[in-house]
Amino acid sequence: MSRGVTRYQKQRWQFKCRVHYENANGLGAGTLGATGDNHSTGLMRVLLDTNILIPLEDQMILKESLAELHALLTKNGVQILVHPASVKDIENDKDVPRRNVQLSKIKKYPTLEAAPPLDRRVFDDAGIRITDSNDEIDSTILTALIKDAVHLLVTEDRGLHTSARILKLSERVLTVEQAHGLFSAAFTRHPIELPNLELVFVHEIRDELSDSIFDSLRADYPFDSWFIKCCKDGRQAWIARDPGGKLGAVCIFKEEIDPQITAKHKLHGRTLKLCTFKVEKNVRGQKLGEQFLKAGFRHATTNSCETIWITTKSHQTELIGMLMDFGFVGFGVDEKGDSVFVKEQPIDPPVIYLPAADYHIKYSPHFQAGAAIGKFIVPIQPDYHEQLFPDINVQQLKLPVVIRPLPGNAIKQAYLCKARTRQIKPGDILVFYRSQDRHQCTTVGIVESADRLDDADIILEKVLKRTVYTKEEVCQISNGGALVILFRLQGHLLTPVTDKQLKNIGISWPIQTIRRITDEQFRAIAKLGRIENCILAC
Image (cartoon, rainbow, N blue to C red; front, side, top):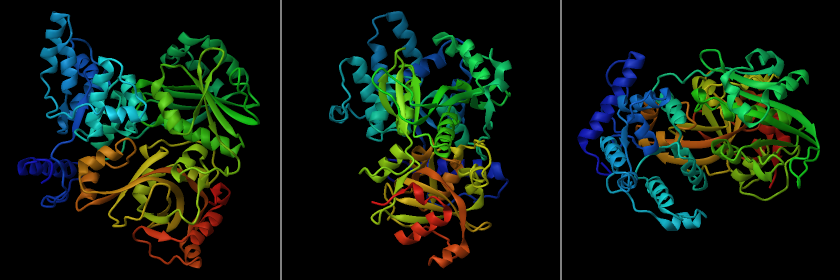
């Protein structure tokens, strides 16, 4: 065993996984590799920031998601660790009574042994300045992720999330709500059912104007009068409801022509403005913000809006990080002091050179498909197809934009399989083929990364923010090694491509594993699927 894991740890972890899987499915012993080697490290290791652990130990009513997260991690054998830099920070507190109380609470948790020292070079190269002791502590904590000493970090510190985004570690740094939602899905046999995303007229939710979801908006500007104006103007919104039926998320939008967005910047042509973008904390971590963007991208493409724009407050770092991750660019501030972000939605693929993966992020749904870019058909079983692409019939049947938000309905997704190929690279194109029942090519994705891994904990760490797989399924797939593909959904073929059509272009069936296809074959699929206008040939 690598990384100093004892045989006892390995057997204990395998037994735990097997019991969870059997209890969920009523299956007999040995279903999940009772004797197989899944190469687990023994325990998933999660670093919890002290800004989480100290409130957890305070004598107060705990935030429900925090208490449930702690119970969830403990119940499922996830190792909760504290970074020694955090402990040292508390030890330096000059308020002796407070220091002693906090140390007595924090030392109940094990510290990360042999924590990697701060690697200043990495932060200097990324343009992150370390100017004081707080910066040094934060950077030292992130170094533990950079050096892979732990799997994940859970923190509410905005600065840590910002630095993680710059360092491309954001997939491994979670808020409490994100961690709660994602671990709940990972340790539950069935993916969490999320409330439907509905397209409504704003006046249809007029009676809910007094709901608490709008309280923070009222603090920023005269929201109620603006909301009523939206009702009278016939504006629409995408909404989602929490399990109790209350508004959990709202995105009010409108189309504009040539808007002046800042004193220096004016957009040209038809644009889509996301006017209100609010997700309540009790439904965060469930991809609702990402689903709003997905609905916005589709609306803009369908209605020839060449840009999408939104304003944010400077403290909305989580929203800002998400916007930048999906191709929005900062355009300064408006007359109110709000930050303005713009996403280009060109009608035709821009002829601009960028790495293929970056091009898709900036100009999606457009993507590069030159001869040098790999194209692959990826077979996917019906159950996983339904989970990854639950909205497919909405688009292919030309129904209204109403997205049924299962975890797989996000833009950033993950696919796991047993394929042995090592040919797939960032920017390559995946054509998903629904096997067993429909025998059709349905969906296109753009690869972000592809790695062959055999450690279930490492796989779960890599896919946790975007997976439809439970921990037990990850264990099962990783037994003997798995191909882990992270990709972004480009979209669904407007017309699915059948086996007969594939055979006519030289792709024989049955398609049972990932198969490389030629540039000409992909062009034929794109034409049959009616997405050829999204392609930049480079």
